[in-house]
Image (tube, rainbow, N blue to C red; front, top):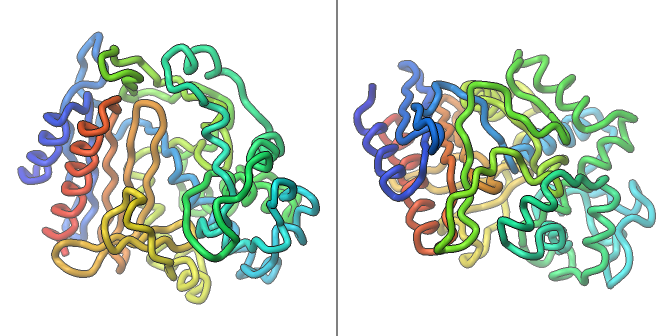
Length: 358
């Protein structure tokens, strides 16, 4: 065991995370670390290579499918949403004629993020009341269309899950098949990722897995949120599940050029600056479903994060694709300062791991 990786995992646990798991792949082998407990009742250890909710890391899989369609000349990144989904993006000053596929994948569309509408009251009661309700993609986009855009398309950056709901609809329109089937046929099956799934509205993680816990109020209890909140956990913007082993394999294959042509991969890696107030480290750039984050030792890494009620996950690989890490944290606090400390500890863990093996 790499004691420094274990020490950083323990620091993340000490910052208040109930359970932590880390898997680092290097040319010299695999390093794993676990800290905390799998659940607050039985207090079992965090499982080795347990199943995880991938959250928004789903977006990287979806973007990869879109770029494969670009490789096949079935799409271009400059095609507009209106050309592909006529009339879907309209109303309240939203105009699909001005928004390109590139804008969707890079979060430069300006479209409102629907998630605030499906969880308007941040409380445990809202979670319990609404967690079984699922919306069709068209319904989620229609919610977003009731709001004015944050900015004209292509002029700024703001993360919006609505972008990837639309990307999933575009995959369906172009191929005649769901984004889920396309991810299976084009990525999961060729790479042999048998433990990575697109469960849609199915709410249960396979075993083994750690429980996820969300604190909705600063003086409130940790609520078991292992059952996802389906209003925003069941679509192309964040519904996939898998394991750290397979997630590392996916990112290594992607960045290593096994899924896209050099031109498409270069487009995916070409990023726009992410604003300083976005919660990302200074120097972060957003490509097409793939973020670039600087390393303290120079250079940077490529990857994506995911989050939902009760969990944070980060997947990252060095720019040469030779080293990859997945870190999962299985609880989230209500206190913003505690959340910031945990986020810093998680980022430090990734930075230390990749810098030590660079």
